[in-house]
Length: 91
Image 1 (cartoon, helix red, strand yellow):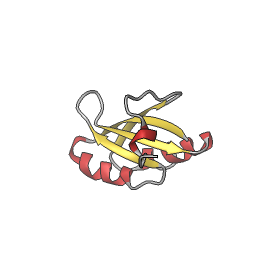
Image 2: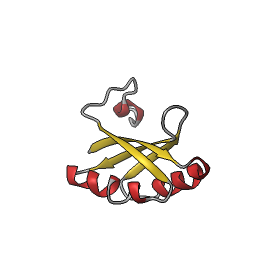
Image 3: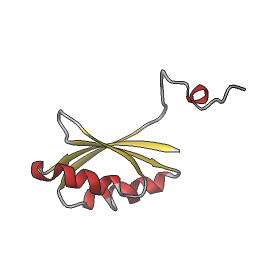
């Protein structure tokens, strides 16, 4: 699975509507409304690199109200949470 983090700048008066539209796109797993230099952060998870362009350039950036995107591809994940332990049923 390829994870991509997309920083999204949005027209200020359209943030909730744009967030909802982006969250409904195939390949988008999460959308966060944030404080700072951008308005939204979208987490994209796809199986192949070609799908990144389809999701971001083909759909996300075309949502009315999106002004600018800044895309970051994750190489490796580091976490304090052990997912295997989280889903363990005690065996």
